[in-house]
Length: 606
Ligand SMILES: O=C(O)[C@H](O)[C@@H](O)[C@H](O)[C@H](O)COP(=O)(O)O
Ligand code: SF4
Image 1 (cartoon, protein in one colour):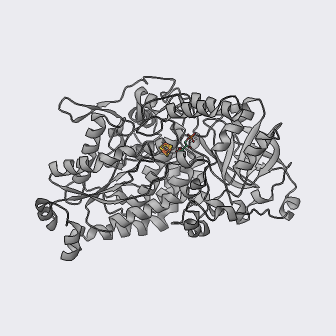
Image 2 (cartoon, protein in one colour):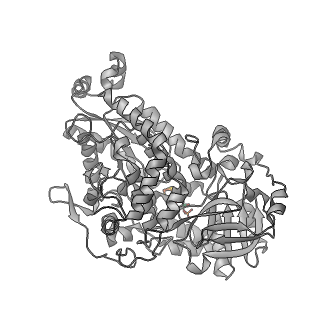
Image 3 (spheres, helix red, strand yellow):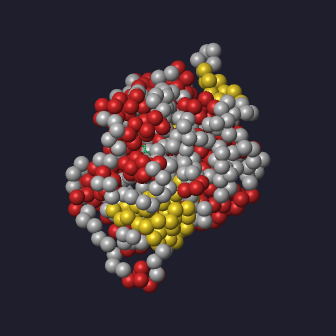
């Protein structure tokens, strides 16, 4: 069936807006494709260097242009529990390539930051910029120009967005993303959050907190809350970069390995040398991007994708805006309740029917474009399946169930948890912002209260410890934008504001910074643009100003006389402490040129 007419209209608007960028982009992709198999333009010297460590048979294969060579971009390290399983993937992929008559080589590695390790630490100020750095680093690997297709190994927050930017920049090559899968379920996320609140209130000690944290984050795989990392998996599947059913299979299982080998074989099958050539730059179009946004809304996905998905789309010449995202939110129902939007984790989501069921339900009422290209072939309907291991160890796919295995976690389209999605744009005399309402109770969608102004999250936490955060208030935490300090996640605010909210205070957050995808229950107007350091109105808010955050009508207003507000001096902040230490000095050029949040806060696109 064709997509809902409202989805079609927004898609058509994006197509029209994107033309000035998309058409030249496609021209570059087609020009690169026309050069044919890329090793043929390398000199003998280039080639000899490129396959010096290969076996004689591989050298022979690669010397001609008849055997496809698969590039591997890996983000393996031991810091991210989600990426640690990638250590063994290159060997698996090489075996699969050889068995399929091809060759595979690691083209390069990219850096990967664990936002959980850097949360609340100086390192978090490198996090957002690491996305674009990852795209650049992947570009270094692919610039060897030895490859006919690429597999990208990445899971977490900035890594999948950065790898997607690279995959679309090298859009003349097919791109298959291979995930590592979620950690098995440990201490439930809400129990972990409860112990954190007890610790913050002095009712639990450090030993008890560390025990709870370690029982929650206990082994290889992605953390099980529905944050940015798991939003990435959802996006890669619904946009057609994953093999169907690949996203949420636990690491270290036979099915996981079978899916990895299958993905490698598929990446070799869709090169220009075969009959199903699927270059990434042509596979991904405006419909794929809209499908990604729809998936975000239907699952209550991470607010960080109001930054990343914009930058990812832009890499393919597609101009996505917060208005598009907000209007799609008005159309797409919420079908998943996964922490922080519920108590379940991604393992429960998968067991309830997972991505196959979600896509099936959304297709039923035209919430998704079915007529899209994917690494698996034509049409998203092929993704309404469940993957399992067949007798001979091959991946077998069954049609997704017609009814959710757990309606409390995954709803049918006829009975959604909320009629609209989770991500709204706010606008008003403070500028533009985004808010995630899927995890906020309806009675907190409108908050009007006096401002309490802070210049970093530690100041707010200190005010909490000093007992100064009484009554209703809107915390204004500014100078947290990309040009100020790299736009770190302010997730440490979640615990304190959550305690105050649980005590009955009506509180909200307003910031030019961003939150973790795992943040949720406190209303937060984030990514305020323009940011304070860019002369944004958020820099003219003063303590005591009444602010009205209205997620129902999509507005964010400071209730001060317009002329008086405009006449106020712009606040300034001492950011010298953010310029050095923990590598921040290396990212000064990024802070200097970063674009605004509503354009993806990127150093790659204005
Ligand atoms: O956007 C995200 O999903 C977060 O960056 C996530 O990747 C990060 O790791 C959380 O902050 C960890 O959650 P805790 O800090 O609550 O453990
Ligand atoms: S989900 Fe976050 S905390 Fe968990 S491994 Fe990924 S980046 Fe680290």
